[in-house]
Image (cartoon, rainbow, N blue to C red; front, side):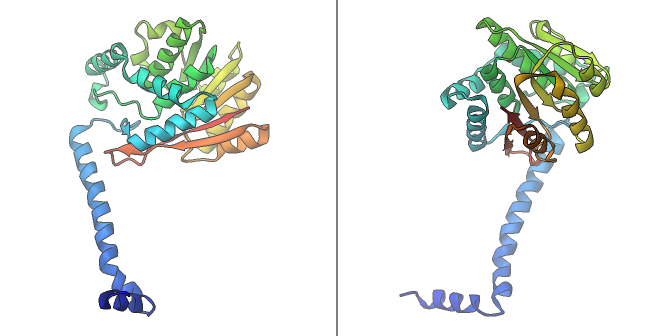
Length: 280
């Protein structure tokens, strides 16, 4: 039989006083949450230099969700996906290159030295699974994602599946991380408008990644422009999945399957981005 305190609490919960009685407990929960956000925000303001394209690690649980996402989209055993994700994180040569190049770059004042891949672990694993001959990415910025893509392509090539990435950006200063060997050996950096650059592609696209102008209108323009360039079983990815429904609508219109992954950053105020995937 419930004790007297429990009986009183239950009785109050059935009266108009319930919202008022619950207010202190609700305030404590909100205060704890907001204090955590403020603490992470203050830490980031002091320790980080980034002003956009934030980098962070994923929570352990979110990493596992990412592995299963790649397993489904890439039709690969999840144990192998975990190996691929560990493979890029264990690449000391790439990590050292990114750290040293970032430290001496002209834009070093706006970039963190520590390498954090987050959802790009998924990009890497998807490329390892799909073995694409031609990847196209729009939006390069410093070139962190480009290096990740190039690393996956180089690993594939060592296993007998060569490929290249065409990286498109409108900023002539973009891609400085991806200009060193061996990564530059599989990267074609094209500076200019993404739509014009997509229209000028002269070979089929096996994997397309939208990560440029994040407006829904531009995202749709890119997917519309690349559609006639795609190989039969091309994989479409968007970095914009937490903001728009563009890729899910494209998938439905073109008879593709669609799946979304959302990041959960570890120890960061930013709520995270994600990966949207459409495939046949």
